[in-house]
Each structure stands twice: as structure tokens, then as C-alpha cells.
Amino acid sequence: MEKEFLLYLAGPILDCSYNESIDWREYVSKKLPKHIKGVSPMRGKEFLSKEQKLKGSYKEYPVATQKGITCRDRMDVTRCDMILVNFLGADKISVGSVMEIAWADILRKPIVVAMEKENIHSHAMIREVSGFIVSDLDEAIKVAIAVLSPTL
Image (cartoon, rainbow, N blue to C red; front, side):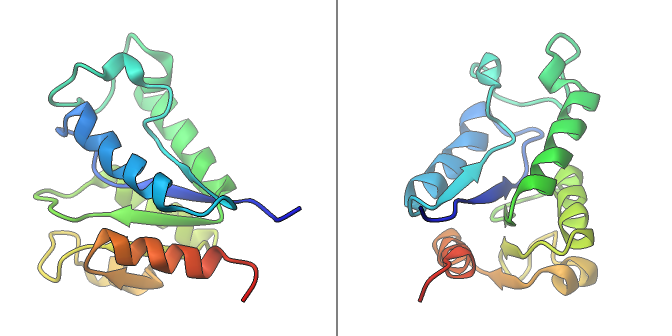
């Protein structure tokens, strides 16, 4: 049986619509081979499906409170083999994604970041800890597959 790998899909959520926050994650997950599973911080949050501008947290939903989000996202980064961060088109800093990058780095998880050269997240520390920085999502997917493929 081939080993299964988990790829955490980090990227901005705050102020995005529900669909914006899940569409690219679904796209990545569909492009992955069978032995790699995408892990989305939006899973189990279908109750937000009508949101056009997601808030930082929602007190009425345990999995969407600030404690719930932090607890599960930290657990996910810890259990995943690698993280793919999509900063493409970001117009403000995603503090949550930066936290996830820091967690991944301290655990020595490989990090691939998709962002433009002039992206707001193009900071010396992000560039330093990211093993791979690419300019489009398809290239980030290729890198993740190359890193997480156990055979030649």
C-alpha cells in the first residue's frame, strides 16, 4: 500500500467570500494524485456558504470561534507533511497564514508559497523559511507533488 501524504492548504480567508476561500482549495485537491490529500481549513464550515465577506471568527459555531480555528489549524499543520500557501492576489497580510507558515517552519515541514514578486507577503522571513516560492498555483502543485512523491 502506498503511503498517503497530507498537504495543508493555507491562504487568506478573512474578508474573502466563502466561495473564494474554497474554490482554489478544491482546484488544488482535484489536481493532486491519489497518494496526496489536500487538507482545507474550510472543511466542515458549510454553514458559512452564504457569506460574501468572511469574518475572523464566529462565536455561534464552535469550529469557527477564534479558539476553534487556532486549535484545528495548528493541529492540521502539525499532522500534515507539507503546506502549500496561496498568496496570489492578496491585498492585505493574512496573519493566520503567516502563523501557519511559522508553525510549519518550526516543525521543519516543507513550505511552498505561490505569490507574485511584489506580493504584500514578500517579506524576508517568509522568503527565508519557504523552501519554494513560485508565481502560480499550478507550479506550486507541481512542487508539492514532486516533494511528496515517494518514488521516482
